[in-house]
Image (cartoon, rainbow, N blue to C red; front, side, top):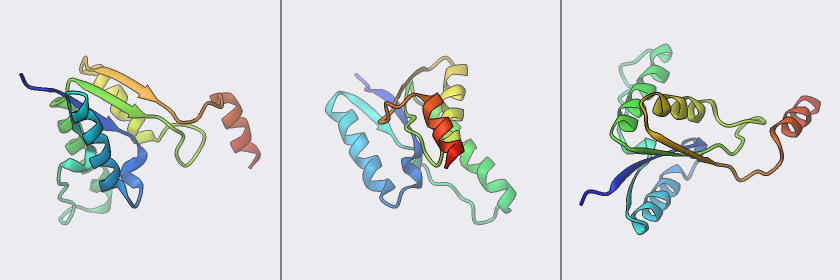
Length: 122
């Protein structure tokens, strides 16, 4: 039986140890009978792209990965502000529109309103 493919969305792709984090998350998936798919699993050819095309290229590659998965698990821990990373939010909406199951988690328990007010004061 083929394991359920799970797209692992989140801001970890921007961290210096992103590959290590992705491998760890995929190992956790495997331990529980799933196949983890990390956004950096697919190669993105941006060499011949203009800067204005790079984001669209990355989006297309990640959308194609999401299409191959049944589930998305998204890390919506605030990133560079009081809310989830915008690309992760987009990926959750894209997956939902395709009828995929979408689950999200955060490592922050402070309510969004409080985080936003604090961010505005800082």
